Image (cartoon, rainbow, N blue to C red; front, side, top):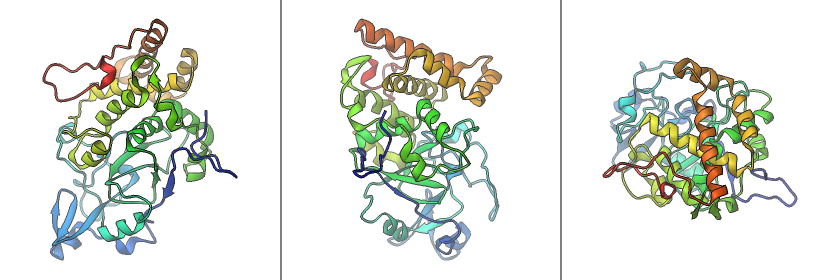
Length: 345
């Protein structure tokens, strides 16, 4: 498998990625404003953006506010002003199901400062990045997500690919997969996943996604993956620009934990196939995530994540061998606004 960026000369960078550390939480703190400061100065909060006339202050996303396919993982809304914390409570399910719900940060930054940091680097209304702080012994090591265009703290590192957004959706799926995470665990030696390490991880190239899907040859790998990634990531209106850039111009997909579990299992099984791994190799990799196993066992009495991913892997393998398209478990009911994408046929 190729690495994300092979340093040269000549450099091989098939995704055309550049990297950015937007705001340093210490050195740039003079730019940060709290809710109390902005309201006292006459700014009005709309969603999680402060406005005064045509000027805006954008929310400052911190790494702890983000998780896989979840830009609403952490919320300061319920914390008293000035509270210092390294963790945030779980967001209640009823909030996640609200398509208009947005998280509130600790700080806001002038929109002009964000635009200046992104000038000549990125012109889209969303950002892709990953958590810097991690350990090979955590439940998951590589934690990546897409977020709305906003200010970003220094522990959420940005990846700015020049590839077409429909393919970038596949890259996001790759970054969140167990197989990519397994490679990351072999590379991370401390508590940080910096740019030089991310460059070394085995990431599939854009060309991987332009060919017919082995288990559903009527559609490309990009089409099959993209529908699932959009459904997982596009759970609120503030990511409408990402969905639109990826070819989906409709309402967000309401949060459904069980459906999301099956979607993620399909994505993981797909990447085990795309990396050319046998069933035994996939099972071995899943066994190297003991906290996932232990959490499943406590909740379900078994390592459910492994069982379902391998069941789907087997169904995909059968489809490859017989030529009969893989049948997803995610066919929507009639009238359901959610979609399972081309892979459902």
